[in-house]
Length: 324
Ligand code: ADP
Image (cartoon, rainbow, N blue to C red; front, side, top):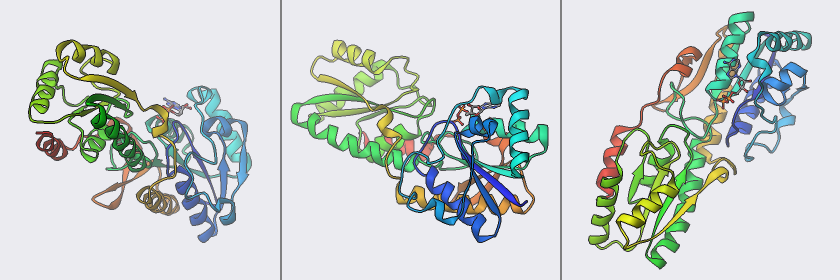
């Protein structure tokens, strides 16, 4: 392998830039050429390439988003689109790539590898932490820190006015962000897709916490929660069945995705970037770099995209105890 391409694809997340930097600098260190591919698979199809050297990634470790831009690309889902991508890569002399993204981006890479035998390596980048084969994805830690900081602020208002807040957080169909920030910010209840609390039990629990002397309450709701209600419907339900609270809703939305990456995400991205390049140079392909028990691991991409992440049952227990 003489020239490695690197790109970001799908939803952006903090730490992607740190991972790009790590891939580029590892290539420079090992005297391999490195090419940045802009706008994910779209840029690959269009040949939107730029040679990267160690200096082209100065001052990006601290930046959110991705300097290579990200995109969703329908054309890459077709054999014709992937053929164009292959022609562009070979014309540029790129003979392996590192994809930083989520399971959709990994699926594309896996299919591409099957069709052309092209060496591919994945780095998991998404705030949702919903990828099998790693305990942390890039951006998850930063997003949790961002959300905890915001909930702390919401709590100031909640306790000053005796209010109950439903705070909806991201996470697609998993509850990792909700559970972690719920414990970290001391929420009174945490609603996650993996556990169905049920509306009646929610109201009972809020009643109990009011009785026990709490003047305000924060309920963290994962966007994919299966209680079957939007946060606004939850507000209506609770107002009707528990009229003692002034209920408010806050949907945090995209501010959870941005911002400077945490130290943890920067370090993780740096480690994963080094490992991705080294693993490609060992002749391996179709793997995702992950972290488990603070050690870097390699998981076949086919498993990473099919497997389901498990919610931490010990953390659920801790949250149950903390919310009494
Ligand atoms: P993420 O990587 O964050 O899960 P997406 O699901 O949007 O984001 O996937 C990113 C891109 O990966 C898509 O826009 C598409 O170009 C490519 N991709 C996703 N699924 C496939 C597939 N089944 N075949 C080929 N390419 C795919």
